Amino acid sequence: MRLPSRLTPLRFLGALLRARPLLAVAACVLGAVWLLPGALLPLVIGNTVTAIARGERIWGQVALVAGLGVVQAVFGGALIFAVHTTWLHGSSTAQRLIADHTARLGASLRAQAATGNVMALSSSDIGRIGNVLEVGPRMFGSVVAFLTVSVVLLFSSPLLGAVALVGVPVAVLGMGRLVAPLQRRKGEQREELSEVNSIASDIVSGLRILRGIGGERQFAQRFRGASQRVRLAGVGVARSDSWLVGAEVLLPGLVTVAITWLGARLAVAGTIGVGELVTFYAASAFLVVPVSTATEFANAFTSGLVAARKICGVLALRPVLAEPERPVALPEGPLELHDSETGFTAVAGKLTVIDAGKRAEELAERMARFADAAPGERVLVSGVPADQVALSELRSRVVYAHNQDLWFSGPLREQLVPEERAEAALAAADVGDIVAGFPDGLDEVIGERGREVSGGQRQRLSLARALALDADVLLLDEPTSAVDTHTEARITERVAELRRGRTTVVFTESPLWTVVADEVISCR
Image (cartoon, rainbow, N blue to C red; front, side, top):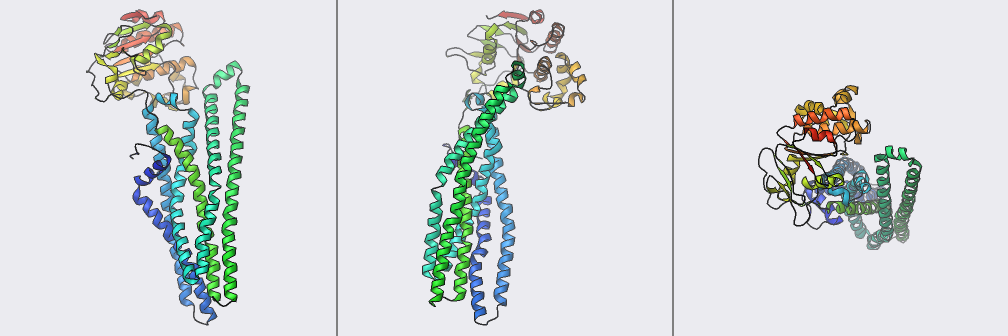
């Protein structure tokens, strides 16, 4: 799906409709055809009453009423299928756009968007986008039905037709004054929801630490306060919504009362017949349906605009690291890394240990191009500037594994790819005892962030995951800081053997890695 260059909430919703034009047109046509029988029914009923008053047979009118009912039932079923398909298209497309864009942003996302805001996009906003597209075709059908009823009334009685043609739009516009406060309050509720999602995410990710320092009560109070703010914002939304629903009944009801009163006066004066009076009354009662749909559309459109504004905000974010206009391909085989700022060079095919102290993470991120080098400085990958290499190629050939990298929920086997190198990677990371302790072995489901295992076990599993990739260049940041000395000694020897012929850079202060290193560099 192609999005406009200048993205706004309305343009975003329009792009969703243009992505499936036939579906949108079909849903609008079905929405109109579904309500047209109901719009024409008052005229048929009025003619039937007139025929009864004249003593005429009414079999034809009865058949017509039955036919209109069948048509409405058939097209009603088709409409339900169409609008639900439209809902699925809108919500799933919005979800896919968000997922694809956040994946492209990668590490840039966290610095530019709050976690709670991104969570709210998938948990609630995509449903609101679907609601707009679902109600839209029914709104179109309501407009067509309203115009049909108005024309019928105009031909029967210009006065009553004019009351309906003017009164109903005025009633809808009167309800429009209640939409702005509703939209504002829904926006406030959306902001509070993002905040409570962020707090919940922080609590879950740091639950073990909170328990260790006794901070559960403080965070519980903070979460409780945020929840209460969401509740109060929801009450404000409900208050505005209740006024809108009340206006939906009151204002069209006044139009119905006016039409009924005028119709009765005209019938008493002999200007119109009993059948025409029944037509006017039934038509005025039917007009509640378009008004009700208009109210539903206003509500959905208000929520949809708030959701679309948040989605557009995320889609407008751009990666911190720019892709090169003309990417340069890296040479085949082992790669060499050179950092001009420190003068450090990791020789191709060698295991290099760097003691960089507190600068280790900064240096590793720069060499793997998770951050750009300072102006005037650059990182070279076998002579090619890192910022001239396509990020996809750089990520596949130069892998940076931090000891605090995240785990996604799922079977352990699925985390180790490709599977044919998993066994060697597990052995090198000395993970055999961990896998043996799992009831399901490699099929054991590891929860999000690997909370089921200890810090040392998670570190070894993360190392195995990195080793399984068999990258041309592997940068490891303190890969064994949480394991005991004997285990670390086994790991250093096995990793050195497994990575022989590949470029490996280990940022660590541990002397055990220097024993197996080809080169040792201090960058403190």
